[in-house]
Image (tube, rainbow, N blue to C red):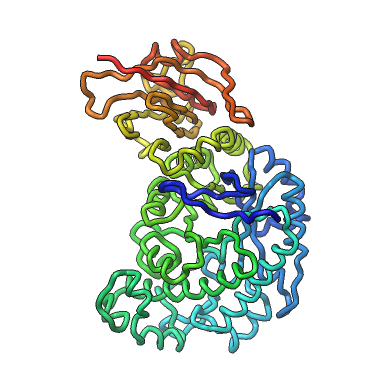
Amino acid sequence: MTSLPRLERSGSATLLLVDDEPFVIRGGELGNSSAERAYLTPFWPRLVGMGLNAVVAPVYWDAVEPAEGEFDWTTVDELLEDAAAHGMRLVLLWFGSWKNSMSCYAPGWVKADVARFPRARTSRGVPLEILSPFAAANRDADAAAFAALMAHLRDVDDESTVVMVQVENEIGMIPEARDRTPEAEAAWAAPVPAALLEALGRQETGTWTEVFGDSFATEEIFQAWAFAQYVQVVTAAGKAELALPMYTNAALVRPGAQPGQYPSAGPLPHLAEVWRAGAPALDFIAPDIYFPNFAHWADAYVASGNPLFVPEALRSVDAAANALYAFGKHGAMGFSPFGIESVEGNEAAMIAGAYDVVAQLTPLIAEHAGDGTMTGLLPPADDMRTPHRTRLADLVLEATYERVPAPSLADGVINETGQAAGTTKLPAAAIVIRTGPDELVVAGIGVTITFHTPEHGPEVVGILACEEGRYAEDGTWERLRRLNGDQTHQGRHVRLEPGRFTVQRVSLYRYA
C-alpha cells in the first residue's frame, strides 16, 4: 500500500484522493443481503456495464465474529477479490450495533446475553431490538470487532480497494425519542456535558431540560449525543488500525414527523453540530436520500458544514438526474443508488449514461469543485411554469426541463408547444462548468439553457459556438459535431436532448 485514500479540502468542497489522484465515486449500494460471493457473482457484469467504479457493500458483524474473539474474514476477502477483479473500489458499510435503527446484525452471542449487552427501553420499560448506547459493554464489543476488521484490511488490502468505510448504518431511536434504561435515565438527570455546551455555543449550565427545555427536541439532542459518543469510540478504534476516511449515515425525516416518529437522533442536518462534537473521529455525516426532494436534502447536508456523499439513493430513472446535480452543484465525493444489483432496463441505461458523463468530466469536476464556477441543474418542481434561474458569477442561466420525449419536429428544435409524444418520464438534469469567462461545458439530459446578464440589461449574451463531443481518457476533447443551427435554435439556446446524455462545449459572446 503506497498512500492511504484520504480527504482533501478544495474550496468549499472536499475531494476523495485515491493513489493521490481525485476519485469521484460512481457507485451503487448492494442490497443488504447481496454481498456474498455465491449470490453476487452473476451481477458483476451488470455493475460494470452501468459504468460503476465503486460498490458500496455491507460487512456483517454476525458473519465476521460468530463467536466472541473468533473472526471469519471469508466474506470480506471474497468481496475484495471480486471487486478488484472487476476494476472496482469498495466503500464498506459496517453493519455493527445498528442497522436501520435495529441491532439485527449483532452476533448471536451479543443478542442472547441481555444482562451483559442491554437493550434500549421505552418509557414503559419495554426492551427494544436496539442495543443501548449507554452500555459500555455494547460499545466496547462493537469497537473491538470494528478494529479487527480495519486491522485485517490493513494486512490484506495492499491496493487500497477499500476507499472509505461507513460506521454503523442509519442509527436512530424509535418509537420514542430517547432510551430509558437506568443508565440512560441517570445521564438524563445529569448536567449537560461541557464539551457539547461549548460546541453549541451555550453559556448556561444544568441538566438537559434546564438548558434545552422539556421537549421531544431536547430528548433527541440527548440521544444524539449518546449515539455520537458511542460511534466516536468505535471509529477511533478502527482508525487506530487503518486510518481510512470514515462517516456515518442517516435515514431522513418525513415531513411533519416528530422525534420518536422517525429514526431519531441520527446524523441529521439539524443535529450536525451535536454529531461533530460527539464523534470528531468521523470525517463527515451522510444522507440516504429516498425522498423526491433530492436537492433539498443534498443542500441541507452541505449547508450544515459537510462534504456531500450519498451512500444510498432511490433507484429510478431520476437517480441519473440526482447524480448529476450532486456532482455539479456540490462537487460530491460520490453518489450511490441502493439495490444496484437489481437495477435493469431503462433505469440501468439512464444511470450508465449519467455515469459516462461523470467519468468524462471527473478531471473538471475535481478542478472546479468548491470554487463557484460549477453548478448542477435539477427541476425544482414538477410543474415549472417559468424558467429555473441559476447564477454563476456574472452569468445567469435560465433552464427549462423536458421530462418526456418530444414530438418529432424539425431536427433538434425545442418542443415549444409542450405537447408530449409519450408519457414515459425521463430524467432531466445538467452539470454546467465555466472553464473560462465565456467558455462553458454543459452536460446532461433534457435541459435547455439560455444565458443572460444578472440585470437583464442592454447587453445580450449570445452563443458564439457550440459543439457536441466527448472527453477522452487522457482529458482531450474529441468533437463529434458542430451545433450552430437548429440544434441551438439559431443561436438562442443550448439544448441537451431528452432521452440522450450529451456533453457540449459552448463559447459565448456579448453584444448590445
